[in-house]
Amino acid sequence: MSKLFPKFAIAGASLATFGVLWTSINASPNDQQQTAASLFVGEAHAAEKATIIPAPRINAAEKGKRAVAIFAGGCFWGVEGVFEHTKGVISAASGYHGGTKRSANYKLVSAGLTNHAEAVRVVYDPSVVSYGELMQVFFSVVADPTTLNAQGPDRGKHYRSALIPTNNAQARAARAYLYQLGKGKYWKRPIVTKVEAYKAFYPAETYHQDFMQKNPRQGYIVRWDKPKVANLKRHFPKQYRAKPVS
Image 1: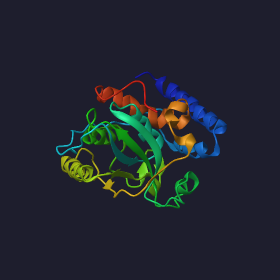
Image 2 (image 1 turned 135 degrees about the vertical axis):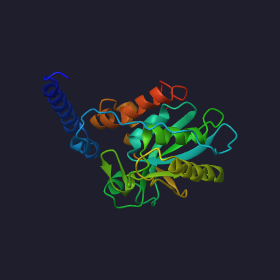
Image 3 (image 1 turned 45 degrees about the horizontal axis):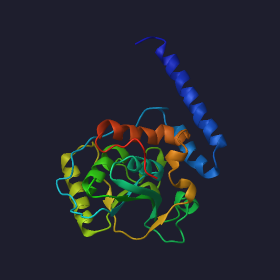
Image 4 (image 1 turned 90 degrees about the vertical axis):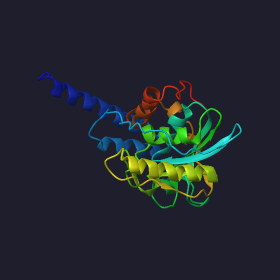
């Protein structure tokens, strides 16, 4: 390794940090909350690691051309962004699940004052992509199931990871898959992701919807979420689609 490498690495990290700062300065107050968190990450541009896991042995038998499932896996921007690039997904919407309608707003949720989790409602065609395949993608490239109330740089109960089935078939498949993954020990730490009973899903504010598509150069998106889409393309090429749904 060249002796010049540390200097170049430091310079690169400094430029990356400046870019995040500049984005934060020009972002809205809500966006600054997300952007500022990335400043405390030691590796300025290191892509999130993918953990490729096997498909579920038990899947949800769903028929027809339309099914709905909800996933909570940290900041909803990245969860939504990955599923929007997944074949068979008809739509993906960011929102809140677990709390009341009155408390379903970003200011309260991000302050940790509700029971909500940031979540994504995925509408998909079961004849193209199964619930099991969506779970496999979710745990492989989106969410780390071993971090309690945390994902990436984000901390708080509203960033918890959860599978939120909307029917009995999904619920059975979700519980079986978490058991399967726990037995497989694909991560060094134990799995803490829970299956949460479906309540009401409340769509997030308009500016959160399709956030990655609308803000591809935003600092948080570049650092934390684009690598997830890149991992989807690399490790699940058959499920990846270049043009995202909206």
